[in-house]
Amino acid sequence: MTVSAKSKVCGILANPVEHSMSPVIQNFYAEQAGVDMVYIPLKTGEEGLEAAICGAYAMNFWGMNVTVPHKQRVMQYLAEVDPSAREIGAVNTLVRTKDGYKGYNTDALGLLRSIQEQDINLKGSKCILLGAGGAARAAAYVLVSQGAAQVYLLNRSADKAEEFAETVNESAGRQVIVPLPIADYGKIPAGSYLAIQTTSVGMHPDTDQIPVRDQDFYKQIHTGIDVIYTPMETRFMRQIRDLGGKAVNGLDMLVYQGVAAFELWFPHISLDAETISRARQSILHHLGGTAHE
Ligand code: ATR
Image (cartoon, rainbow, N blue to C red; front, side):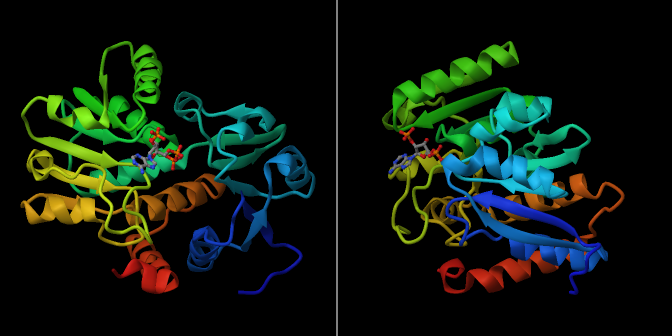
C-alpha cells in the first residue's frame, strides 16, 4: 500500500487503542477494494475528545470510528446523528458531511448481519439478553426493531436492567423487554430461546467464567451469540454446544461492523464475500494465541 498526498485518511478514536482490530480490518478492505485510504489509530482520552473531533474535521479526515470510552459522549460533537444510533444511545462510526460528522452505530448492523448469516428469523422470536451495557443496547435495538416477541433481560445489577427495559419499552411502544436480576434466570418461562451474551464474563484471560452456572438454563437455548471473540469459544458457547445448541462468537459482529462502516464511507463499494472471509482470517492471525483457546 502506498500513501500519497491524495490518500483519504480515516482513523479510530479510543483509549486504549492498542488492542483495536479496526486498523487491520479497514486497511485490508481499502487495499482489496482498490480505495486510496489509510486508516490509523488515534489514542484520545476523554478530556481530548472534543478537540479530537474538531481537529479531525479540520484536517479533512474522511471518516472515523469511535469506541471505548467515547461512544456516548461523542454524540454532542456531531452535526447529525442517525435515528437508530440515537435510539441505541451510542455512535461508533462518523461520516463526513458538509457541516461536520454524522454519527452511526454499525455495531447493531454488524450484529444483525451476523444473526442473519445463521438463518435466524427474529420476527416473533423469544430471546434472552445477558447484560445491560452499551453492547446490550445495540443488541436490544436489533431484536426489537426486527420484531422479537419477548426479550428477557438478565443483568447483575437489577436497577440497571429495569432502567434499560423502561427506556427500550417506551421507545418500542410495547412491553417487549422483561428485566430480571441475573439470579432470577429460573423465572424465564420454559421455551426455546435465542440468547445474546453481551457481558465481559468469560473473556480472556478469565475464560473459566460463565454468566449463569446452572446447566438447565442452557437447555432452553437453541442458539447462543456471544459478543466475545477472545477466546473464540467461550464457556457460555461451549455449554450451549454441549447440549446440542448452536453457538456463535463475536468475530462476525466485529467483521461486519467494519464492513458497514467502510460502506458508509465509500457508498459506491460493496465488499465481496471473499474479501470479508479473508479479513476474518487476518483478524485471527493478529489475535494469535488469545483467539485459540
Ligand atoms: P459494554 O459497553 O461492552 O456493554 P459496559 O457498558 O461496561 O460494557 O457493560 C458491561 C455489562 O457486563 C453490564 O451489564 C455488567 O453488569 P452490571 O450492570 O451489573 O455492571 C456486566 N458485567 C460485567 N462484569 C460482570 C460480572 N462479573 N458478572 C456479571 N455481569 C457482569
